Amino acid sequence: MGHALKRVIYAMAEADLAGDEKVFMAKWDIKDGFWRLDCRDGEEWNFAYVLPQEEGEPVRLVVPTSLQMGWIESPPYFCAASETARDVAQQYTEQAVGSMPTHKFLQYTKTSAEYASLPETTPGREDGFKYMIEVYVDDFISLARATSQAQLDHVANSVMTGVHDVFPEDEVNKNDPLSLKKLLKEEGMWDVVKNILGFTFDGDKKAMWLEDDKRNAIITVVHGWIRHAKYRGGIPFEEFESIIAKVRHAFTAIPAGNALLSPCNRMLRMRPSFVYLHRNQELLDALVDIRSFLRESVSIPTLCRELVPGHPDYIGVKDASGHGVGGIIVGEHMPCPPTVFRMPFSQEIRDDLVSFKNRQGRITNSDLEFAGLLLLWLIMEDVCKLGKTPGCHVGLYSDNTPTVHWVQKLASRSSKVAMQLLRCLAFRLKIVKASPLTPLHVAGVRNALTDIPSRSFGSEPKWLCETDAQLLTLFNKTFPLPNQASWQVYRPSKEQCTRVISVLQMRRTTADEWQRPPKPGKVYGATGSDMSHLWDWTLSWRWLPTATGSGHSQVSPHEHELDSLVEGERFKAAQYQASFHP
Image 1: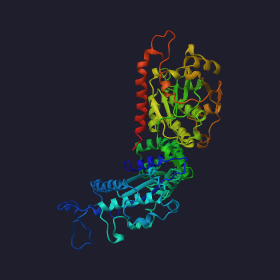
Image 2 (image 1 turned 90 degrees about the vertical axis):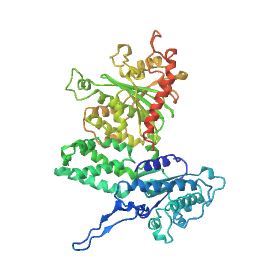
Image 3 (image 1 turned 30 degrees about the vertical axis):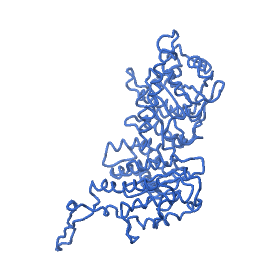
Image 4 (image 1 turned 180 degrees about the vertical axis):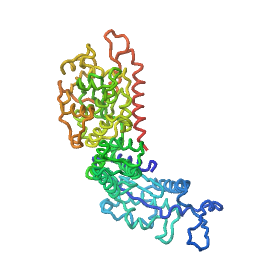
């Protein structure tokens, strides 16, 4: 669909979520669109074909004089015409409201109760009128944040007139390029709930979900697969591949759902003749979770704002070592208490860690780092109260490249541990309704803020902190906050730690377990006022200050580097977020 669907989502996400502003939608279809484009003289022979005949009948050669479907050059040729019509409609809409003549089909756009609830005009409020006109092949789509019927009429007149400027109108309405059949089905009617490009959009809640028929068809097939898994029957690969492609498209409206697809992706790469679920528990669990996500997509629709990444409201930075994980949480656009946390790893985890001396271990360093990121997310849910702000933006720093890559793609190609960690992260992202994460890489030598908490268990004697009080004192002394503010130490609860460790050790966990928030941890230290805009400040502490003042410190030796560092980090975040933009 190119970028048409993304542009509709972004336009919906820009609307005010809290106010009474509504987004009205309407769409128009070109009837027999390809056949309305005439071939140039001589080009009709490109489309010539022999008409199928019964045996004994004379051979008839068909020489079409219009564009034919099925040729690879036909869609872009037709789109050149339909997008031109969109551009013409845009120019008409830019004129003053009420300046366009009334179109003969305008009556079909005015029949909804939502349209009738608007005043006919709103004098003095035309400046707040916003609209978007989009086209996908032969479907013309309009969105409008309007305060009067006159504004909606103006957009409708402009679009339909623009279409007729390129596809001339017919005196007989049923033969008109604007499909009368679709208009009678109220597709051209302005309303706040409308099916667009396979998804249902709600212009009141600014939310979207997969159309009911498409969603129910996928659920029915997946449910059948799950039921018949116990009979040890196989799924034809072509069927499996087709349904997973539809699931991937459905997850356009459930971005966290992509984190469930790693076992499916693995099967797609193998391309077996049949897929056997009773032999692959991870794949079976993934399909059960996929069915659950799709079922809940209407009762808990996705806000379009949740699909749009943005500059972080909160920043989390973590580091993991063989001894434990530690990190910090600070506010950027939104305030929260500056927080430092840590969690030691048990001897059982250390003994299972892959190393040169232990090549038989089951846990890699990257798995360990990703587990630390999942713990960071659980703590941020509590510290930043993420569930109370749907669509909040979160930036996560890690010095482990695979971890950053897994979160960016919400997928893992080889690590089964990462697949399970992604599955658990998907449930939490969906529950708190967060927007796509912004994962960023930070070089280990520049990750000073997390070196102390992750190595405060004895691996670095100078940073050994046996109590939370010692960690708080050391952190406030080493990294003093602006305005004489104080850090707080967050001690993860036993339930938070157990959940992460269970997944790291590949113990099976249920969806119900991860859909419930774990018991929160405890905070040590005098809770000061919440703070924001600390991202730039954290960048100034990328190097640990030295006791002698030599080398890097927060003072003059690297002040000339700070501006370029801040600019570079912000550019990296903006560049990643731009990859989601239409």
